Image (cartoon, rainbow, N blue to C red):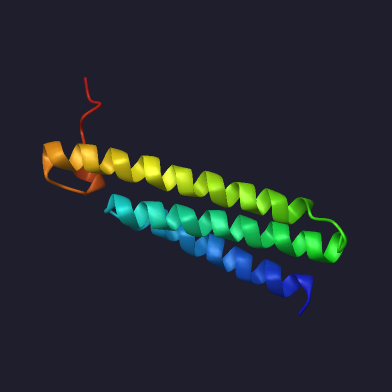
Length: 101
């Protein structure tokens, strides 16, 4: 497999994530789509590291850091969703108008 194969898979995964984030109404679906975009970035990092610097570990280390940040992002997002769901009884984005003045 060449670098182009990895980049093609990563770009398709990123586009699916963008499409999902823009079209989903449910917050959990939006969070999952954002995770897809993070994973596409991780594939790019690992692929470029493998093909440009096969002996280095910087890309894999950065990908591991991104996965850690993504896990923290999901935890915070789900905690916010749970707090808002308890007050509004809905998980749809268009029903949230808590920040309106």
